[in-house]
Length: 340
Image (cartoon, rainbow, N blue to C red; front, side):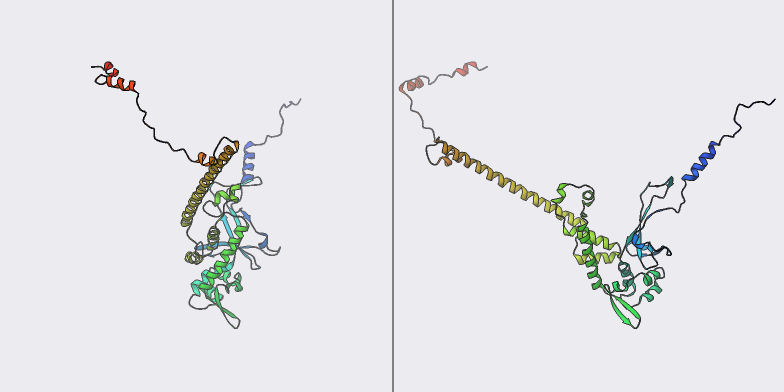
């Protein structure tokens, strides 16, 4: 006779094994990153994007750029904040950085190489690429030769093209570029100045009354263009556009605000005086029409205070003179109440 079992013969699952599988699902590969790519640089099905490092004059070192085999190039910007991570589906990505592609004008980066090698003599891009091994691919494949005509003197000899840096032409082209960026900032209604951060995130009716200075737009546009230039060339551009420093602009804005407040105060006091004078004239006209004033100069009586005439001394009667004569040599009644 077989013995009947009261428990199931099926083995129970191990709880530690479930923890391990859950941990495996939550791990993310270290190479996984969050990247926003513009649709303009996306290649065809048979092409691949490529990450390259080229020299960035604004940063003074090599930077990442995303390139397309068709000749398109975009700067790869990186935004990193502390204690940030990403939730990707059911996974946690510890790398909380954000990468974003930004279109740019390659002529801005080419100015650095022209100033370095073509300030005294004309050279071709191939000759410059020999001296700049790290950026040789950038100089030969991604620079627009038509854009270099705006910053350099061009000389041709057969199939070869030589470039010589022209500082006056470069500053004029950068100034035109800066004005174009300033117009875009106006169209986007980007508020500039030292209080731009609060005005961009807090909208109110008072913003429409504030007149944003043209110099604020020019300063911000110059800083945007100057991100791709050498520091000394950026300073030359600021002097070329006659843009004052931010501290000087703040001082000028404060003085202008004080002048506006003083003008408003003077206008308010003048309006109060006008209202008081009109009120007095209305009151005088009403009294005159009511018939309470006998003379026609009732307005003058209301507005100007009456003059006080001096009091005349009253002559004493014979009885008062006799009482005053008899009171001579006597003490006043207050002397009897004095404490000795």
